[in-house]
Length: 324
Ligand SMILES: Cc1cc2nc3c(=O)[nH]c(=O)nc-3n(C[C@H](O)[C@H](O)[C@H](O)COP(=O)(O)OP(=O)(O)OC[C@H]3O[C@@H](n4cnc5c(N)ncnc54)[C@H](O)[C@@H]3O)c2cc1C
Image 1 (cartoon, rainbow, N blue to C red):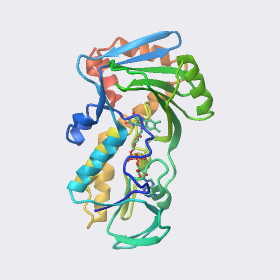
Image 2 (cartoon, protein in one colour; image 1 turned 120 degrees about the horizontal axis):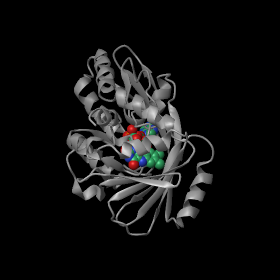
Image 3 (cartoon, rainbow, N blue to C red; image 1 turned 180 degrees about the vertical axis):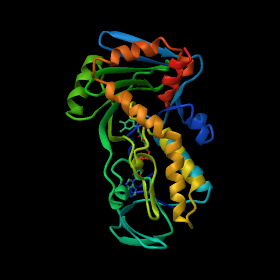
């Protein structure tokens, strides 16, 4: 397997908080070295009220995001993958038995063509592979965040729902604190500056990125398929895509046979069986943000047993209601 990465290092630039549920360790082996903090609770601020959702055990981890990429890359290398850095996929052409991939070397400025049996587009929210497949883009949020040099090892994240159609967050990262937000439209900068002022924050570094969301009708065509943000395999109500994307990558590794392009149908079925309902319900939950229904929903959820709910699976909210 050949991995193409357009940057000169793996994991940079960072455009993600790296806050993931414990489910991450269902997909990759546990690694204490990449954990910055362990989280047991979330405090949601809506209007003038705050609601705490707390569990006894660790619910999620704050991971060093670039270390996560380097770790996953080392696992891929151990499994036999070869990596070309500074290598940007620009376009590709599908044939009956193979795909020709055009690569631009961002250092030497040279162009190369590589022939492959199958192409997996794991190239993020603005996926060139998705564009090459002629598929429609998913909806996008604009995310922005910064770090401060406060130390904070407490075990809860905070969310503020006073920005349009999404939320702002504070993540204690141990040696630093992260403040961020995402917005659908309008000015992320305006709301971010407001957040920093309200919180009295003096940032040390800024990061930004796109967050795709919503279920795409197809993520494969011929000998090409998408995975991760390229496929919009993201939780619409939080913007988290690490666990969903990795889960789908694992499903692809089990379902897809590069000799048989028809196995991509099995991938499509299997990942939708695993996450389709969660993404649809997650989109419905997101639809409630910035409406008068949000506070009653959070109030109602705060009365349910937090132990029965999972941050990656909005269907567990419905199950917790049924089991009341
Ligand atoms: C502000 C923000 C905060 C977030 N916080 C969280 C969070 O706390 N938890 C969570 O689960 N998710 C979070 N996410 C979402 C998360 O970052 C993504 O879901 C996740 O990184 C998707 O991984 P991916 O490998 O699919 O795509 P990416 O991480 O985008 O990786 C794509 C890779 O492909 C490379 N690439 C792109 N195009 C090409 C090309 N043409 N040729 C060669 N290489 C290419 C890129 O350089 C990159 O290395 C956040 C996103 C944002 C924007």
